[in-house]
Image (cartoon, rainbow, N blue to C red; front, side, top):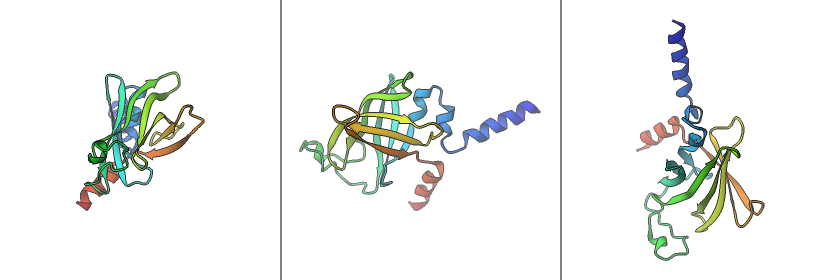
Length: 158
């Protein structure tokens, strides 16, 4: 009986928002999933392949929007949904951060070096610092995890 109660408790905890970070097979995978842009006008999804993490735009308020701020005329013609906003991150278990990647700012069309991390006890807030040269010369943004309730509301709005 105690074993069944324990399993029910584990199942309930896994259903909580942000449980993906808790239930991740490895700490590096805590970053996987969908995240809101800071303005909540779009979402990107972080995936992993071969130890490399990337984030691709999966939703945007204007589904037909183009990447028109991109300085490359050919890239400026592509749809905004589907572009990689984050590229080439590797998890550093010592630093407990995703390092060595870049972040693309769709508002300016610029790409910056970037570091990503979680603050203690905030598994649903992904911090990303984009910078030029050294991290001191940069800006930190906070991205909130897309919850099951967010997904359900989006389905109902269709």
